[in-house]
Length: 341
Ligand SMILES: Nc1ncnc2c1ncn2[C@@H]1O[C@H](COP(=O)(O)OP(=O)(O)OP(=O)(O)O)[C@@H](O)[C@H]1O
Ligand SMILES: [Mg+2]
Image (tube, rainbow, N blue to C red; front, side, top):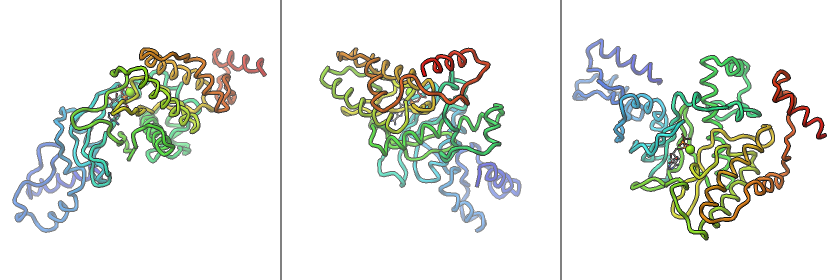
């Protein structure tokens, strides 16, 4: 039952004076002695026991956050992926990440929920750069082909913006799924909801894993971790992904191991004409950190080697459908490619 229907139901009950309407949007269980409640209503309430309307959590959310969390994490609670929200790990530019106690569905005790900001899209500068060559995905991670949605995205209608928002989340989730299954160092993703992703939590109850940029490594460990990350990048390329925002800020470090995070902007090495430039920037930023830890690295050479080892061309072939004849940059790009043929 969706929340609006539920609220309506309780409104109706309230109007009949059966029992009081709760004062917050969260705890909707009746507070009276259950014996006074007619059997039909008791049954309804019991049925609702696992619903998001009984979702009360330990974390002291700010008022504006409450509805947002209920809306974003209620589904995980209903489906027993989480049983409690314990604290906010970090409020980032595009999302906030919460530490949750896992529900019955998960073997681990703790999980991390990444909840996207409603205004996330506005913060994404140059999003067309990443969207090129990427099909939008729906809430289940399937490619969107229905014309209505595609048109809505193109015309940037309100519904289109919602589709786009969901698509970024779905790209992050499906990329994590593919990479986790392929053995890359990424937190195991468990489930996606319309505004959130649930994944393995890296850290313990006392503290979350720091990101690499907050960690100093000795040269030996730096060498080992860099070699490991190179393997991860290899897996990414093998599975058709360039991270797109890689740096020491998006690598977690915990008990001597690394985990790559933050994938909504993944791009395809084959279908995005900026893919190599984005990849080179990823490698350069990652190398900057490891050079500070004492490694001797040549980022540009490394990027070119990894790229070509996967059979990708340094100068990408771009399907003419992706080029805009009225755009001088696109025209220049097309002419250069024609000359190089
Ligand atoms: N699985 C996880 N386990 C522990 N901590 C995590 C996990 N995922 C994310 N975090 C923490 O949350 C922060 C934000 O996550 P992420 O980078 O995915 O989101 P973001 O909105 O892009 O943030 P930012 O703008 O800071 O890059 C991370 O820097 C890290 O501190
Ligand atoms: Mg990040």
